[in-house]
Length: 502
Image: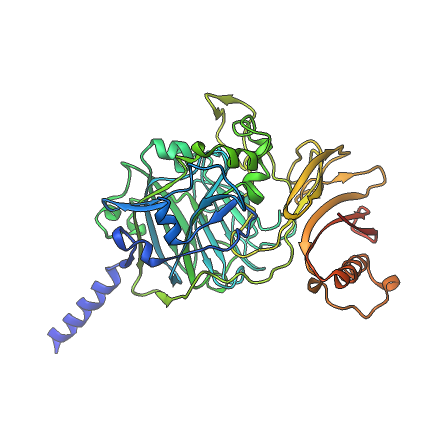
């Protein structure tokens, strides 16, 4: 009896000290068979055409050589149609909790016009969450990490991590933050974690631990990878990993906001982030007047815009939640409220040395991630002007007009700005009467506006605007490009609204 008890106790001790065990190894020749190729239009309005596996293989956009996984973009042809050919991969399997370890030799970051990302996302975005592990645009230095959720999730700014908090509310429609910004942490003190300097250092390892209490992300440069990771027995609690680059914890019950995530690699171009900050990037803006023009006409510039993966492994704790099996296809794109995308602040310091910004990015001079790739398929942008407020300005209010025949590519012209911006919700023009003025260009259908039985005269200003748009669209019954101009007195009281078709 005693010996049996000792054996049982030994088994329990063995289980409790086993830590993480390997569940899925995406490395080697089986890599592409464990992913689906996303071929829909880019939800973030990128100048990109995502191609299927057959096309990617025939055009040498993907390959497996000596165990190394290559995922690149077209760097031989002038782009046409929706944009430059690229790939976006979504794992066929989903996970709740776990330890994701990516050993990466090379990433597409640091190339003007690019917007690469390595991330995870739930099928019902944003209800089941999104975790951005690697992300950046143009010539950015330092990695950007973020969470995107429904309402009720926020993170503490006083956690034990090396990055710098840029925003704390993970809700994609959080007041006082840019739409879709989520909660973001910037690797301001580690230039080797992203882009050109990452590649020059021969890459490194990203480890993402997702538990019920926190989501932590570490980066280990090549030559500094903990021995337990190298040996295939990773242990974040060993003490050898040091401080994570980011730690998302605090006012968020993780299990209520994150579940059943698939793993995603993608490289898009321009769009709602890289395109919006093009003019504020001193390296890239000198190459062409617009992001789209540069991406379209300079194929050779994208020779270096590729992922080179040594290995991707998912580990699970035997005592924790495991994977949730195979999920057919890519995450669905649910209808979401139109997203207003404020003009991001300049991404870098003004000083440039040898083609690189003189200073590492900080929370005040790096653009917010701000643009989830999770499922917002509507083409909506908001621009404002001003030189103050929570976002800061770009010196002028941007006024958008639709390009004929293209509902996703507005032309942007400058208009004078007066006064400071409205803190946290973009930078808006403020006239002498205290009215905040902004413009939004959006593609919507009449179905976006439900019937309202109340009379227009009695309806609040927001309902008046909706009714006008709804009535117009019910007449045409098709998607249009519209300009909404809405003046709101200080204090967000009643105001006037008009809808002008463009």
